[in-house]
Length: 287
Image (cartoon, rainbow, N blue to C red; front, side, top):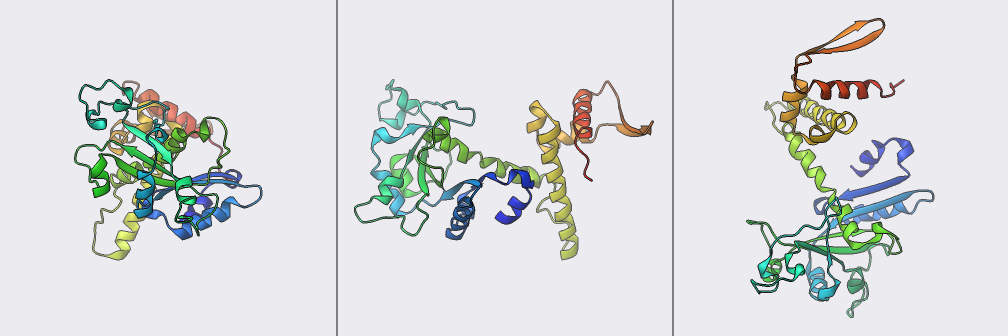
């Protein structure tokens, strides 16, 4: 799957890649392969891969000094805050730290230089391990370790060099860069609205054709939002796009060696459709 994803990227853009993966797809073989890709001369491959919260990681988290946890930010670089009265046990506490929703820290040193020996022996030397903690939302399933201190933990590894300068090398932004992978789950969720996984038959051949068609539809919607739409429509669900754009009454006409899009000017989203049409028409045509 990794090779197929890289192949789908135009060759001109394959020399500088950031590859993200959640914990469900992580494995020793995957990280070894990513490390090999990153070691090629003339290529820059930064990976960010989910990691399991195991016994050694729990011991490292327990050893992290309170001051080593840095405030996390979202994809816009903003701090998310909410009242967390259990942060220090004082309902009247006015400390800002008790309002912070999430923190991040690095565990690499605690594991590499552990008194019991290198706890990451056998993994790439350039691999770094990070942990994020956040206040769980109501109903979240927590492990016994997480229930004990009231934080939910997420771990991941990356090969981003330690000497990375500027904002990109800061813990908060290393965390934010990893969490952009969450959009993949959004794509899967919206893809189900296109029919992915909703098989219409007990016949394998028919279901394979259905799945291929549903995946094509989901892919076309993703490219439509990326290349042609702005604002709310660029983030809209398939159901919204169907009503506002795809099911709008319009037709294509030809004349003077040109194609024209005829659409009622009274349709509320006519201007958005026209803009999308112009942007798609301006794209270079495949030979």
